[in-house]
Amino acid sequence: NQPLALGLGPSCLSQSPLTVTCKDQFIGTIGKKFFRRPLDSEEITHYRTKVFDAGSSPADSVSLVVYMLMQSPKFIFQLELGKKTDA
Image: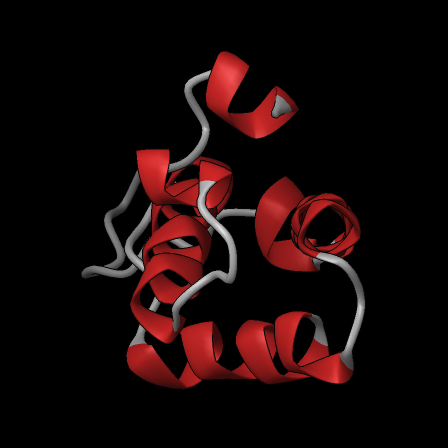
């Protein structure tokens, strides 16, 4: 299992069938690495329902989540919130 070998996901990814908790844990873990911030529950649910719950195999779903996260503008750009400074 490639995501496990790369340290990108929880050990439950090697189990079958995948539980909702495992799917959410994987999306939350990898999403935090890619977006440089924790994903909120709405984002996690979005990726789970669009990918894992769409009927693809677990291996294909894991790959598709990675591709979707990498195609997001949130992967490339990071919003920095705070007060504006005179710099």
